Amino acid sequence: MLLARGMLIVLSGPSGVGKGTVREAMLKESINKFKYSVSMTTRPMRPGEKNGVDYFFCSKNEFEEKIRQGEMLEYARYVDNYYGTPLRYVQDTLASGNDVFLEIEVKGAMQVRKKMPDGVFIFLTPPDLSSLRSRITHRGSEDSTTIDKRMEKARQEIKMMSNYDYAVVNDEVPKAVKRIEQIVNSEHLRVSRVIDSYRKMIGDK
Amino acid sequence: MLLARGMLIVLSGPSGVGKGTVREAMLKESINKFKYSVSMTTRPMRPGEKNGVDYFFCSKNEFEEKIRQGEMLEYARYVDNYYGTPLRYVQDTLASGNDVFLEIEVKGAMQVRKKMPDGVFIFLTPPDLSSLRSRITHRGSEDSTTIDKRMEKARQEIKMMSNYDYAVVNDEVPKAVKRIEQIVNSEHLRVSRVIDSYRKMIGDK
Image (cartoon, rainbow over all chains, first blue to last red; front, side, top):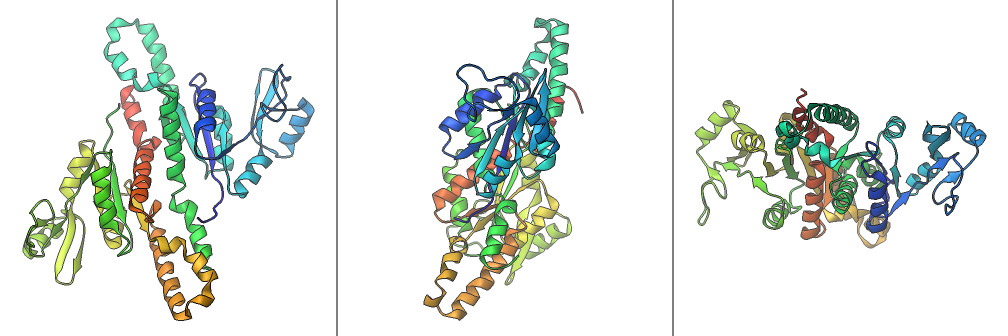
C-alpha cells in the first residue's frame, strides 16, 4: 500500500446524543486503528482517573499559555474550567500516517473545521430527529407545547448538521459504529487523499 | 427512513481494467439495490442477446435523432457504431428514489460528470498501478523501454483518476465490490444528500 497522510475524523453532535458511548464502542470494536486524541482540562482529577488517559490535567495558567501559543486545536470554557484538544499530538499522528479520532462538542468541531478543512466531520443525529415526522403526523396525541419545543430543537439540530460532511443516526450504537467505519474506509479511497501518493510514485508533482 | 432522491453511481476506468466483471459481480452480490442502466447501441444484435437486456438496439438514424433531442446522457462512436446511455431512464429512476449504476468508458464518464455533478464517480484502478513503485525499484531486472512505456501509461491513468471522486484498486473482484459498496453506503449518509429531507420534515424550505 501507499503511505498517505493520516485522516482526521471528528465525531460531534448535540449534547445528550451519545457521542461518548459511540466513541468508546468505536475504539474498542473497530478494526480500523484510530489514535484517540486525549483532551486537556483544568478541572481537578477525580478518583480513579489517570493523567494522559482520561485527560491531560493542567493548571489554568498552563492552559491559557497554550491558547496564547496557538497550541490548542480547539477549546471551550465550561463553568469555570477549560477543555480542549492539544494540536501537537494531532499533527504528529497525522504526519506519521495514522488516523486521529476526535469526539468533541459542536462548537469545538467548528473550530477544528476552520483549521483542518480536510478532516472528516461526522454529525451524530438523535434518532428522534428522523422519527419526528411520524410524531408530527400524530400531533393530536401530544400537547402542542411539547411538539413546538421538539420542533425548535429539531430546527437547531438540522442547522448544526449543515456544517458537517456526514450525518449518522444513533439509533443503535453498533449500527452507528458500523456506519462510521464505512465512512472512514470510504474516505480513505477519495482521489483527493490518494492521488499525491500516486504522483510521487511516478516522480511527478 | 426518509425518502431521498436516488444516487447516480458511475463506475469507470482505463480499458482492460475489468469494469464489466466488477459491475456484474456488483449487481449479482450486492445487498444494495441498484438499478442498472442498459446502454443503447447501433451495432447489430448478436445471437443470444436480448433487446433491453444486453442493450437497447436501434438504428443509426434513431440514435442521431436522440442525440439531437438531448436524450442521451453520454455517448461515443466506436468504429462505425454508437454506444450511449439514454437520459430518461436515469432521470426517472433517480426521481423514484432508486440508485442508478452506470459502467462506462472514461470519456463518457466525463460527459456525465458535467451533466450530473452530484453523482458518485468511481475510478477503477489497475492493480499494477499501485505496485509500480516496487517495479521501478527493481528497474535493473526489466528493460528500460518496458519501464518507460509503463510509466507513460501510469501517468495517463493518474491524470484520468484526478477527475473522479474515489479510486478503487481492482486487485481482486470481491474486494473491489466491497469497497464500492462501502462508498455507496457512506455517500448515502452525506449531509448534502439528506439535509433537504430533514428540512422538509419540519416544514422548512
